[in-house]
Length: 622
Image (cartoon, rainbow, N blue to C red):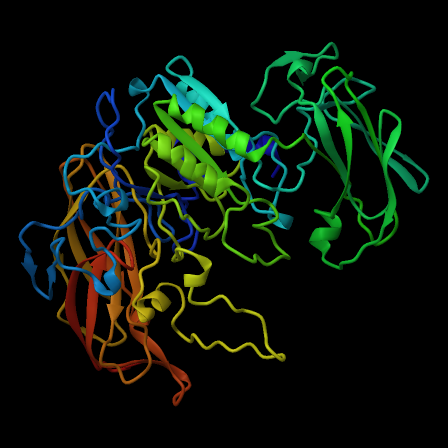
């Protein structure tokens, strides 16, 4: 399907369907793979605050469905002040802790009553959603804001016709309402990006892009003229070129050492205004087809440019030989700003703004195929940038673009954390809708995120002397954290939204027959001021088991929706397979009869109800 056909299909969708598409909250995904996960905590009131955004709640479903649910900032939501007893179990009050310390008031990043756990369950102002009526100036900070990650690297990537960046999305939402300031901050340390059509013209026609020609075995792959080489998209001013294409103003082109490069294998040269800055033979050193045909390594060289110089003429040439692919990419990177000065400029912008949106994320070299990550850090100066901005503006929202877990050492310092994953080419538009409350964030974490790499239970995945020992057995993910009795940064199933919920009653069967499904019914009330969706999750435990089992494991979920002040009943089916284990003696799946412990909650670490069910032998116990 080409971009135009896809665009026509998307254009027929409703607003809700578009947001679900952008956030990944689609029904064809497997359990726990969709949406945006968010952390929110109260902030300290700032002088001149004109009201407060409404309390934050929960995200979308850990499965094929998206949804939003309860708030965990200010107080433990979804529990009665007096425990309400129901057949088969009991509801918890906030003072009754869940196992492994999760869900306790002050637990970092989860049910914390406030930043660093120091605020009680008072009506503290919330950061999200942002209200444009309360904002006169908004600072959008970070290099990823102007050039965000929308997809993974390698063969997972496609080439969209256009991308809405976070900066563009927020600017469009605030146009005519508030002033927007962009401070790029330090570069995130990523490799040079391909030279886009926004910064180059075909020297023959003047149209955006480049020209390609072949001559025998040596191809002049692209002949590109920068028009002229300006700052990254979103910075500086733009004007119409005499050739009819958009170009950046020469007045904003940064002086200094530019780094140009060519991706590919074999004999390659690169000239800038006739001066050869790269000339060599670069043999292919891998058989990985994704590297050979999609993302070959880049060979780079530096040259000095000044703003007084006319637009430069780049001519990369590459010899095409069998077995080395044909992918040829020209890259260009402007002079890197001094990191400390860039952080200082971002801090100044945040200090003068009513709200700061800091956009950080991984790079294409981090989240890609054919390469293992050596750490979980965001890289570069991004952690320093977030901390410095959060220190001067309590209404700081951190947007994280990542395809997997990353360390967030500043998570308790930020007002809110929004995990955007890789949302696709309309990323900025969808993000703006969530930031300003047109839509709720719609995700649940499909994995448990540790505080740091050292706290992660399983990190060694390389064979030793040809043997890889799976010593963790069943205890992976949230089950590993529960076994160790430690609390991670964010549990499996965690996610917040823009309303609050109270878990009023739970009805679970006292007895079930092995091999048959059972249903757990949970009555919830939307206690917030707006409609929302909550994702009710059921976990199972078997403390006195004759076989090795996790401390607790995920058994089922359902997403429900209710208007403000209304109740809704969630019916969660516990499938027979949720109670089965693998019998080595019988070489088959088997169900162990006896008592099991059922728990209901919002994540693997935030439980609101616990009860017991007895599994009885059936005609077929397997």
